[in-house]
Image (cartoon, rainbow, N blue to C red):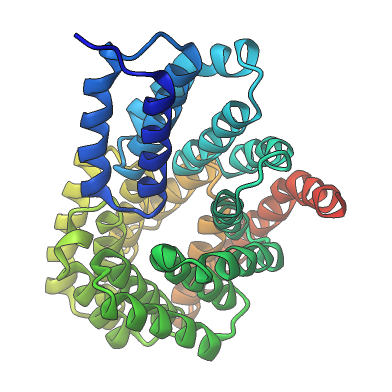
Length: 375
């Protein structure tokens, strides 16, 4: 059996990572099998094997196999940081660890990993890698409500992706990050323009999953404006796209659809979607959405305030303060409209404490960000 030069395998892994960054799941799966078949015949080289494991952890993040991605990162940590001297290897470990922590909803830890990754990225002359970095950091800063920083990173990534035709889908996703930040800043008309532009480009290019995300986000925009019928229509359209229904985002879409239907008073339809969402969240072990679903059902279907508070505290314990701040305000308004001012006051106060926690938890990465921008 002839041996394969490790340089050849390394180049194919490079090509594989490019396909992963382009979000081409089917092509990436084929290339992974090809590389796996080559590795037993490859000339021995520990760096190439380490490189494969790191890119494989990124592949598993793309395919939503978070458990295996985390296991791979744990497995290679010592080799990546202590045994390898290559900047790229160090960068990949920190960067992919940041993405993993983000998907585990440990947002502050994700930003800390991204900061360490950026120190390595300064030594790597790769424009697309820089765009990918800014894209992921924009998402992380958005999640901890650092909107101006998120917008800055999203615009940087957008400009680079726009200059490369093969990264058009990533450009569309940057458009949606900009929309999400504008929504937090209550710029609803600008938000709609971003999401509608994203949907149009995605549809034109056959990016079905990305199109469904634009629809979902447009639904969130309508929901925030209490335009519940329009929101429900967007969520239904998103869920009608198979790529969306089969993805991890579907549990959130079914939850949101159930919630807005309760708010419309369409109780039977709301219960039906609630059951679908609850089963999905249970099957996937989604503790955040199990708590949210039970909270919404307790509020709108059972009027069980004790259960509402119990599930709100579960979200607090998970440190999902952005979510609890928003839900607390929503619950407070619900009770205010029912003239139950005592309960309304409780939830308005709770929402204020949650908001305080968001701002305080965001302070360390905010200071880190400022020092990085000066460099």
